[in-house]
Length: 425
Figure 1 (cartoon, helix red, strand yellow):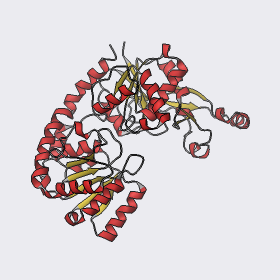
Figure 2 (tube, rainbow, N blue to C red; figure 1 turned 180 degrees about the horizontal axis):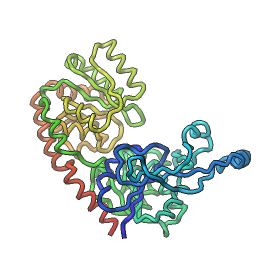
Figure 3 (cartoon, rainbow, N blue to C red; figure 1 turned 180 degrees about the vertical axis):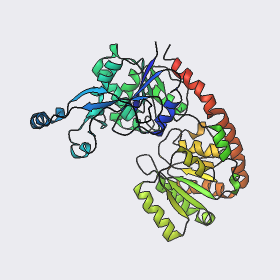
Figure 4 (cartoon, helix red, strand yellow; figure 1 turned 90 degrees about the horizontal axis):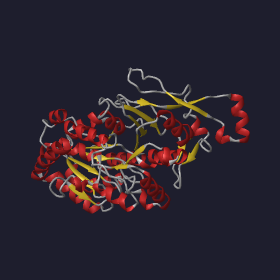
């Protein structure tokens, strides 16, 4: 009998799509339940996307709104249809029920998922997920990310009951544990999740140790990048451009939020303005306040700095292939995908030690591991990367060996298949 896997995660994420694509042609029946309303990512292949069907009955909604607003929009069933390209990517609602309703009715359109303040839209919440699980009867549930997907599955498990719940693999993304363990409500919820799963996976050895501290008893699967590997032949063609020491482009990650510290990164860039005056500085994934800072640096300091608007994986690789260095500053992260892209294309990576970059690069040789809150140190390492030709050229060769060993799609695909075969005997 064909094995059936139900993914729970962000259906519009390229990371989700790239991971699922690694097993989309292996003969298993793949399904995904989104954690919010969004179109399936264009890279998604060979997976059925399930969405709630909301039956809108105006009179009943009006009457229920007056007495029980939480149940005004009753989710009746979970179904599916076919994506326009013929691939099984299913959509199941007759009207766009989440947008704009989630903005207007936010007070009762979602419910909390547990101890923390994380909430789920009702049509994509645990009760709908539980219905789908009962109907689909998957052999394995794979939640991809903790705070939305994992918490959602945990609550659905409580609804169904542990005795009748399928095997569950929970994958830790980014700073799901590393950051959120510091918040008591999240820590308690994460701990309950880890004690409930049958398997755990992540992309950092660091996070396995943290998961054990928080109560994980289940097996931890081999550490693999959550986004899958690279097409080495394509990357190799990109690397045929200028050697790193001949390049004059700096790539800067632009996140400024609970974890991102792009403003700190840009302050370090300003302190190196004398050596970067003839360079092109490209800021990607820029937050609003970062955009303002970039404009200020361009006008007041005369730097050739610009914002790279939304770019997919292939476009990012092309940019990195023309960059001498990459700078990523954050208070929490796992493997930074940007750092891996830099390593693959020869750009010298400068990444904060709050990630697990130390599991990929040797500090001072393959790149620099930096503190997230010390502008002086960050600026010093950036200056060295900008001026020491032998350093960046030697790092490119060293990192390419790592990429060939650990990021080649042809090598990772068999590992991912074994990854699931452990859980699907």
